Length: 525
Ligand code: HXC
Image (cartoon, rainbow, N blue to C red; front, side, top):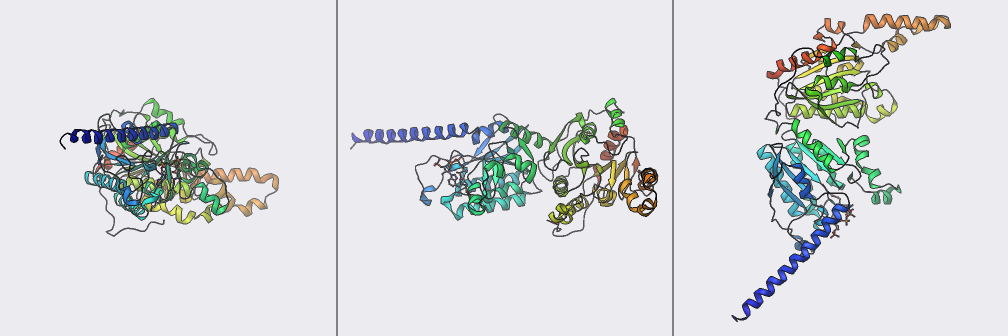
């Protein structure tokens, strides 16, 4: 017996070694397949996202229970997700990264437990959580158990909303009900060509409707970031996606109780040559356009800002920047796209951004140049009333410091909605070029003088219309009627704007405002 022991022990060790070797080969094949698709592995992604050496993995040895679900039990450790915490630029975050090389990154019981555990940790620590998605969705073999974990994750996302920033990175497939967890998070980035997101994939679409469509056409990064608006950034590749998230995190506080990171204020306290350039930004002709990002770049520190949703509803800009070292959320109309008009997409984009900033105590800087809401049956039937109302609701509910600059047009509903005094702006500035009115001069003359113009001989109408338009513009637009009533606090020259905005935000640092106590409001969803 004693003599047999070493032999038996040797055989067991040999078998284990062979199994380990088989597992190692299988793992390497899976990693090679992942790389061949142009994708990094779960751990490689974490390694790039976090500061070198900062990752602390949780539940590394948590083992799948696939045998209990009638699956091949001869599988390595792990269960399709890597979780843990580490730092980005020295600041704590929690992370989970779905591992497509194990069970296609699908969510099963053990991976579900791991993800929920790291979400709970993020809430306990009060730090942002980044979810890296690359998964076949709910693990088919585990049935209702995997569905349960998705629903549990959605509940965690909802409870964490407004408490810690949540960011989703879509680095591969994200399909079915699995899309709803990223949808609840604050910001989503997708990688061009290698990621897609949809509720029902191309095969089901074809079976049900007969439509033939590829995964990219249905839910690739281009579609999601430009048309559907589910992605806030379309990254050229995984490295770009990771850098975007790192930049974004740099603007955000760790949670709703802590302030955003503050940097030394090295801005000039006098008017600079860059400020003076603003005096020439707005063209004399009201029909000529300009680029609002030129203004944003001159108002924020070092001209640096990070746009979110840059290719979705580009008529509205939402961006994070810093003023005197502190984060601000910039909401601005972009006259270069559809004259900066407010439509459904622009309203919803800005409303969600305003609510994010408010939840995380980030002051709002609004730059208005808006001809009003977009007319047309598409918009009316699409629900512009209900969906446009979200922006009014969001601004009205926001108690963070709110500073607004009316740059040029502020017509009709656009005036009221774009961070006006009436929705609770603390400081409203206007440039001398501001045109605050119910509508543009041409439209107003058409309504007010229709009969008079019709009675004129046709050859005199154009000149009369020009004269009336000019008279109307002088008498009824401009910032002074609003300034007389205190709707505009100050009319400032463009070159003074940076200093006045900074002063306003400095003054408002101690702002305190509370809303009536209630369980929650009922934003028109
Ligand atoms: C179990 C899965 C899986 C899943 C993929 N795999 N998805 N295993 N459950 N949901 C496994 C595959 O069997 C394969 O295992 C490995 O992962 C890699 O998958 P491939 O198909 O070889 O990869 P690829 O060709 O890149 O295709 C990826 C894919 C495809 C497009 C994601 O696998 C696919 O269509 N999967 C099903 C997607 C789906 O319908 N999921 C359910 C969504 S509903 P081996 O062993 O061969 O390596 C949902 C509900 C959530 O998620 C509810 C929330 C409330």
